[in-house]
Amino acid sequence: MNFPDLHNHLYGSISADTLYEIGKRNPNPRWNLFTDLHKKIYGKEIRTESFFRDYKDIEDFRNLYFFNKPAPFIEFQSKFNLIIALSKFDEEEIRYVAKEIVSAHAKQGINFAEYRIMYPPSATKEVYFSKTIAAIDGIYQGEISVNKAIQARLVVSLHRDGDYFQQYQWLKELMNQNELVKNYLVGVDFCYIEEGFPPREKKEFFKKILEDNQEYPETALSILYHVGESFSDKTPKSAVRWVGESAIWGAHRLGHCISLGINPESFANKIIQEKVSERIDQIEFEIKYYEKLKSLGATTDYSKLQKELELLKQKNSEDKISFSIDKRYIDEIYTMQEFTMFLIKEESNSTIECCPTSNLLIGMLSEIKNHPIRRFQNNNLRITISSDDPGIFDTNIKKEYELAATAGLSLDELEEIKKLSSTYTSEKLSGRK
Ligand SMILES: [Zn+2]
Image 1 (cartoon, rainbow, N blue to C red):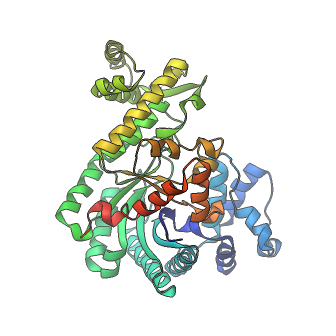
Image 2: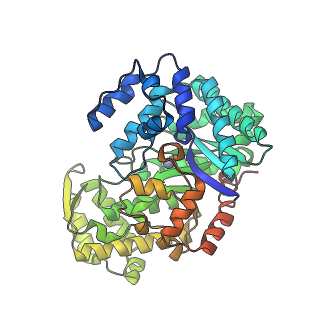
Image 3: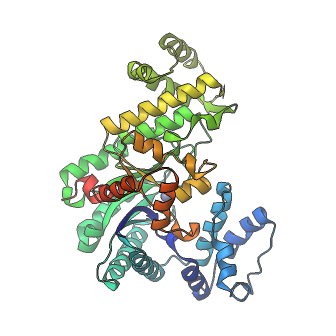
């Protein structure tokens, strides 16, 4: 027992039973958010007028809600949309949900948790204030309800394309006004679709947070960053680089990082495209670290990289280039992964959050034995094991550790990860005083 769970999303942690109750109490569920996508994917009409009678048997409701078989991301989204449709997401409900989840997780043996919450893109300062206060109130009440058998904290997930500088300032302002928020709000996160949002765009933002953390350690916030989870817009090498860049630019914890350790053979014989601008970034990275990369395995020749770079600089940066993944390219992906793991270990303090069920079901792993956690461990990376959206995935932290064992980790290693995870909390990584 006594598991830390550092990566989970508050609303994705809602159990089927709680979600059913929330929906039943909601006078105006936003049905079409769920029913349209459900029909598109499963071809089945949902009768909204008799919904709570049709799904009165909680087993039927669970079947509708759980995402527990590997399937494309869109199916996961359709399940998540059931949460969005049934919930009001007002302050009262947020408080209730937070309290329920914290106390349920304490009973499952979690003794430390960080929960992420995300507001709509259009949320105003008032919304950031009132919902953050509500979530933290609920978390606090949850802790009290189990006599503090769990310590729980909040992280706010920001939109990758939103005004995150502004929203961050609001959160800092709120922390300075409200003692409970100051103590319980511990980080900011970026999640949801990552394609199209290179970490380069967040470099200045990360820098600002890290400087503020030095100057105002009593309100220091961690930077959490989902990266390398899905990467259909670029080559596997660039997807590895994104993880490395996020780490060296200061993200304290990195969510998933499948690209960093996935078996490169899984890309064999595929043809993959990326933009000219992405390719230029990749070549510049390979040139910068050429000697070390070369010492670790197959790389593209220095002169070849330089020539290609000259040619690409004449092209439109939005144009696409195709790569066919042959044996040579697979070896180069492997080298790139080994090097980037070295970089993360030696040149950053970043910790990797592995969420086995989530990675198995929506990642690109065909079976849990292919989970990169074994490779991460072989490379002595800082890792932690988490449950991500345990409500939708029908999982819990204990099952996640069991899956990590199936992926090849020994019980001693799992014990060690569990123990070290308590040193990877947002408060510790951000230098909170
Ligand atoms: Zn997540």
